[in-house]
Amino acid sequence: MSNSAVENPGQDLSQEELTAWLKERIAEHVDLPASEIRTDVVFASYGLDSVYAFAVIAEIEDRLGIALEPTVMWDNPTLDGLVGAISEELRSGR
Image 1 (cartoon, rainbow, N blue to C red):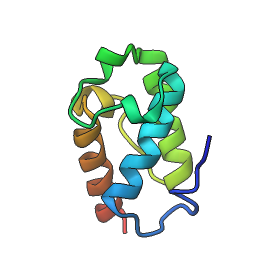
Image 2: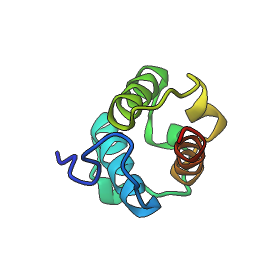
Image 3: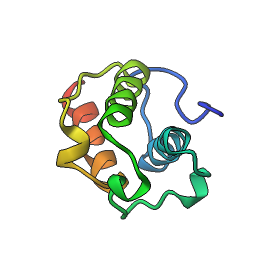
Image 4: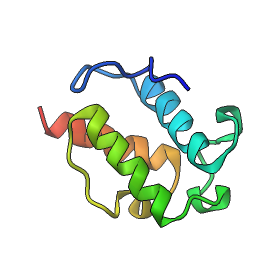
């Protein structure tokens, strides 16, 4: 497992870096290779349940130094949607 795509909270991240890091996080929770996580597939399709979703949200908050709504993954149920929501939060939080 590598967290190299995101090293420091608050750094300027490209959407590609954020997407790659989130793919790794989600893949680990659903026990799949990151290469099998698609950006346009609903998280529930991979078996990501509420317990894992809350764990992913906590990892995002810890890593990026932002606060997210607990429902962010339900409101944005694909990787594309989640990356968009996180990117918006990073922009507004600066």
